[in-house]
Amino acid sequence: MKTASNQVRTTAAIFATGIGALLLILAALTVSQTAQAAGYETIDPPQNTSVSDKVEVLEYLWLGCPHCYALEPSMEEWEKTKPDYVHFVREAPALNPSWENHSRGFYAAQLLGIEQEFVTAMFEAIHEKKKPMRDKEKIAELAGTLGTDEAKFLSTMDSFAVEGKLNRARDMAIKSGISSVPSVIINGKYRTSTSISGGHEGVIAAINERAAFEKEAMNLP
Image (cartoon, rainbow, N blue to C red; front, side, top):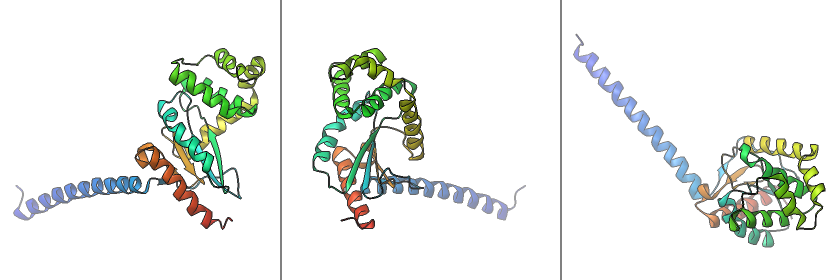
């Protein structure tokens, strides 16, 4: 039979456990709310960037993603007016096997100097014309309408250079804590997205605020 003191200790332990769980939940909610209020999350450890004399803004996307397509106009407008101290790049990691041919097409277009034209054409084909564009030949055919040789584009999709870019992008995305697209990384240190920032305007605001902060930290002109 439990003594009165044992019962008190048991009740106190249960109460303490409940309070502890509640505090953990409240702490998690506070972190989530703080991140959304700031519009970004901190990446730990920070990731390397492709430049040392500018603030890098890196967008992770998938051409088949409706959210990436929806964000694109905001990113295009931002890119037109971005400061000179900002270096903008995009990556299209195949985080899902079904994304691979889109990613191969993206990197082939990047290597052949038609990245933006290709992205625009693919977004239009997939999200406006409702074509899945998962077949390599169809992707190369679309690239051909942009003035690129179809056979060359197709061979580039299967090249070692594209394979290397695929592996590198996947590794970078994982290390940056990317779990969904579109996601934007500012100078390897901060991660934002529509879910973190609350919407398209929030993403752009987070990019601008953190980029300006990094410019001062790097003593850039």
